[in-house]
Amino acid sequence: MRDDSITRGYKGLTNKERAILALHHLCEENELEYQRIESATPWKRYDCLDFEYRNWLDGIFHMASFWAIEHWKLRTQQAATWGLYFSLNQRSKNKEIDNISEKAILIESCLLALDKALEKVCEVHRLDISMIRRVADTEKFASVFPGLPSNIEYMEEMSSYLLKCLPLGRIENSS
Image 1 (cartoon, helix red, strand yellow):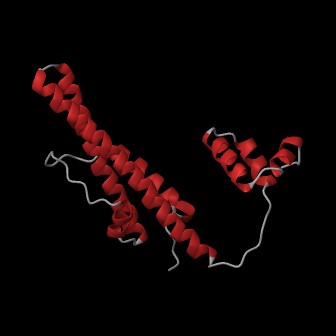
Image 2: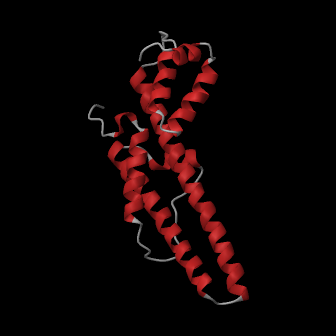
Image 3: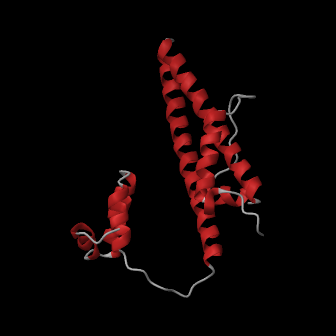
């Protein structure tokens, strides 16, 4: 990255200010500005714990945090949907109730899929799923619909995102 006037301007910012701007540009998918910020950030040398170890530990925590956010987001949607369903169901029977019921079923199939995605990633990487659930402060999801299938498309999408949280987003062959 050439050292243009914008990049030089980033050099005058604090690390916190650069990090906030970097996050903004990452979210906006503005690769050029993100690269300018990166090139304006000084390099340092540190003595620290093995990088691969820290990278894996951080990745596992990032994965657990991502999974927890998705889990609790869906659980919140589930609670709101069921609350609306029961509220409307007491007043009338109409098409809106059927739509809400379908949404509740979809959310529950996504919760089942999210659990399956976590199980798949934990199995591949030999992670203790109970520890991931402990970080997320949750348990395995149990649908109110016996035999409800998981949303396969959502499971594949979430498996991909969970793997991307881990170093290289792939299976590591070394122990």
